[in-house]
Length: 97
Image 1: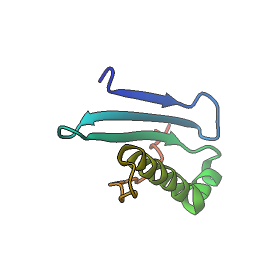
Image 2 (image 1 turned 135 degrees about the vertical axis):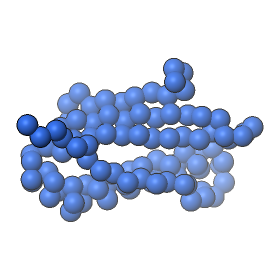
Image 3 (image 1 turned 60 degrees about the vertical axis):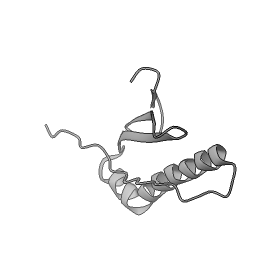
Image 4 (image 1 turned 180 degrees about the vertical axis):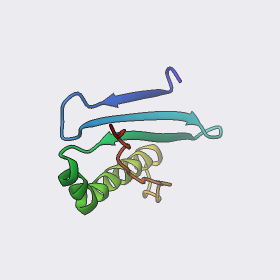
């Protein structure tokens, strides 16, 4: 969707990899639907998996909840309504050798 989406890719950072695609689509005459699709890989093997289960999953979900609510507030300039966030972060499956 050229012009209606963009992608952020982590070059260096805390994750083994991170790809975040943001897509925008008309939703009626005066609304835009924003969709996020992201893939990420955990570093450090089982330690990374443990950290994910203990706190990273919640941190990622909170990040997208916060972003959705800020976008809603910016677009409506009124009291924020609950955004229809359905963040279910799961690390990408890595192929087994």
